[in-house]
Amino acid sequence: MPEVSFYVLPSQSAQERYLFACKLIEKAYRSGHFCYVLTDTPEQSQIMDDLLWTFRAGSFIPHQIYTGVEPDYENTILIGSRSAPENWQKTLINLAAQCPHDFQQADRILEILDNNEEIKAVGRDRYRRYQQSGIKINTHKIGLER
Image (tube, rainbow, N blue to C red; front, side, top):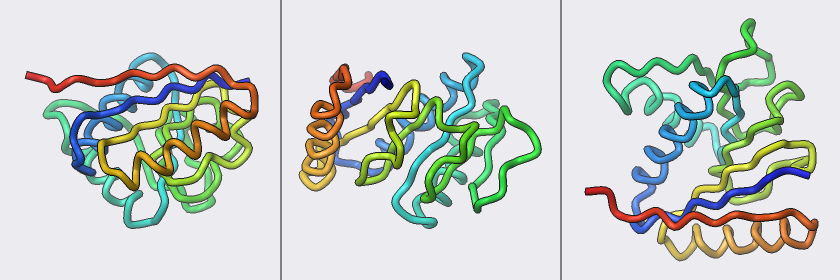
């Protein structure tokens, strides 16, 4: 069973949500975990791809958009709206509205919600689905950074 963590941000900004995702991706990568970032659309995948190049000066996180072809190097962060390939199912960062396909196969799922009512509503649905599957869920309310 995976460990699921929900991060609840105080803002309603999609940009803040994406930037927080970049911080989690960087932390996972520096800890030796390569992860899959699940998005709703190819456009959202492109936003994340672009942000990972620019969100922090001096930061380098090898990443690419997943188009159905696995990268040559395993320690690459994959971003996509498709189901995660087998070797990238251990750590999932979910920015999509739906639960990841085969989420029981993951070791860790990181869910990021902002204060937008639509985002919170679909997040509650995913929370219930995980809960009904018997998965332990951690919730972290993130305060305003000063």
